[in-house]
Each structure stands twice: as structure tokens, then as C-alpha cells.
Length: 187
Image (cartoon, one colour):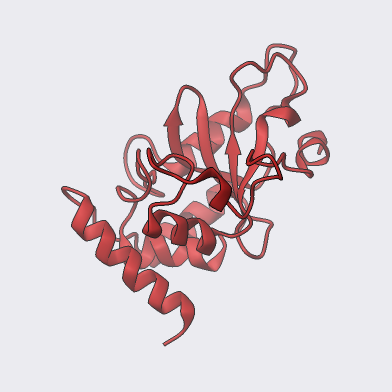
């Protein structure tokens, strides 16, 4: 058993125990169609989450968006956020960054699909008038670490979270800005 196998087994167990009703996993065809529509491949762990655990409906707080299907999905959200601009007409959402969870108030958890580890980013646009790169933070260097944080209930979104325990935070316990944001938004 690989580390990913063990992680997905634990994620599946927690998802089943915490979600009222899990949708069935996405099919291989649904994942392939989503990747064709998006124009990029999903990181392997994200693909396995959707294929082996469920097509969304589990995870931190507001739960992962479904990848495929009717209504609001990660694919439809990506297309929408890529088509809209900020107040100054500037792009605010970089290519190949898939929104996977809507935190509310305009905030999203998103996976950088160019990152081999599937870095998880936080888009926090509140208070940003322009210079959209200031709205992007690194929540976790990898999707596996982000999932481990959810499993251990130590994420920043947890009521009793220990801010000092966040390995991706800066020395003040704050989430660090995503250094590639400005360059990626300019593409």
C-alpha cells in the first residue's frame, strides 16, 4: 500500500462518516471530459479523490465541489472565474488553477494543477480593489498535506486550530502569499 492509498482510505472513511450523503465517484469518462473542457490535466491525487472517494460533497467545512455533473461544479466555476475580470478589467484568476471548494464571501480553495504536488491555494479577494495577486495565498504546498490537515482537524478554518502549527504559514502565523500569482495572472 502506498502513502496515497492510505491517505485516500482515511479520507474515504472520514468522508463517509461526516457527510450525510456522498455522491458516487466520478467515472473515468467524466474526469477525461472535465480535463478536455478545462484544457489541462488534474494532479493524480485530485483525480483519485474524485474517482475513488466521491464526486465532491466531502472535505473541509463547505465541502469539495463536484468535478462533473449538473449544476455547479469545479469545471463550471473555473470557466466562470476565468471569464470574469476584476473592477479594473484585470484578470483575477490564473490559468490551470481549479477552484475545488467555495469558502463563501468570494473565497475559494483552489488546486494549482501545474504544481506536481497539487499545491492548494486560497483566493481571498475581500478588500482587494486591484493588484489581484495580493488575493492569492498558499494554503498548503500539496494536496496530500491539505488533506492531512483536514483529517487531523488542524486547518485554519477549524475553530480550535493552532495557528502556530501551520507549516505553510509565515513566521507571524499568517498564510504566505503565493509568489507566482503576479506572473501567472499576467499570462
